[in-house]
Amino acid sequence: MIPALERDRLPSLSTLHHAVNRERRAGRVLDLARPSHVRGDAAAYDRALAELALPGTVDETGRATTDPAAKAEAECADTASPSPFSTGVRLYVPGAHVVATGQLGQVTEAIAHTIAVWGIVCVYGDPGHGKTVAVHPALRLLPRRIPVHRALVAVKPALPQLRAALLTAFGLPATALTNRTDAADRALLQAFQAPGVLVIDDVQRIATPELDYLRLLVDAPTTRTSLVLCGAGAERTLARAPALASRVLTWQQVPRLDTDQIPAVLRLFHPLWDAATDADLLHADATWAKGNFRTWAKITSHAYAALARTPGAAVDRALLSGACSRLGPTP
Image (cartoon, one colour):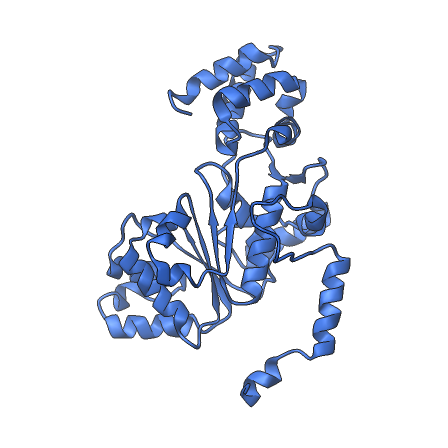
C-alpha cells in the first residue's frame, strides 16, 4: 500500500507514458537487458551527447555538441550555481577537446537512469580510460534543481575522516560534528533525505568497514540521494563489501579505446594529429598508448611542445617516437 502523501507525488500513468514516448523520440534508449560488455549503437546516444554542456566538446563526427547560445547559457548557470565538475578536466595541451565517444555516451545513459531511480552506480575501469571525464558531462546533463555533492576522501580514511568528508560534501559543519558521532550521523541521514547526487571518486581508497557505514546511510528508508561511485579497481573494492555491492543497481565499465577508433578520435582530440597517418598513430598506440586516453593526452602534449620548438616539423613516426620516449619506462 502506497501512503497517500507518496501517492500524490507519483505521476499518473498517462504522464509516464507520454514522458517515455517523448524520450524515445528524442533518441534516448535504456536497453536494460543488454549486457554491459556488448557495444551499444552510437545512434542511441546522439541526442544525449548533443546536449552535453561541456565547452570544447565534439562528437565522433567532429560536430560541436553545444552551440554558442547554449554554451553562454551554461556558463551563466555555472556562475550562478557552481558545480564541483564545472572546471572541466586536464587535457595537458592548449587546443584539445573532450571527445564525446560511444563509451562516454554509455556512461551518460547509465548514470542518468540510476539517478532517476535513486540508485547506486559504479563506474569502473583501468587508470586513464576516462572514467572521471565521462562522469563529468553525465552529471552536467542533470536538471539544475538536482544538487551534485562531491566527497573528497583520503587514502584509507578512518570512519571519523570519512564522516567528515561526507559532512563537507553536503556543506555541513564537519569540524563541529566530527567528534559528535550521534549528531553527525543524524545530520548525514537528514542530508540524504533530499533528492540529489553524491559522487565519490577514487572509491578504491575506502576500506570495507567504512564502505559498510556508507551502506547504512544509503539503506535508511528516508534516503533520496543517489550514489555515484567511481574509480580504478572500484569493482574489486566493492566486491570486498558485498552488502554494499549487492545494492549497486548499475555497473558501468569504461574500456580502453578500440583500435579502429584511434585515428578519428585523436584528430578530434587535437588538430595537430590531422597531419599524421593512420599507420603512424596505430603503431604508437600498439607500442605505447594501448588505447589509454590519458597516455594519448600526454603524447599529444609532448608532440605539441616538439612542434613549438621546431616549427614546420613533420608529424611523423619520428616525432611520435620522440614524444613517447618521454612517457617513462612503463607508460
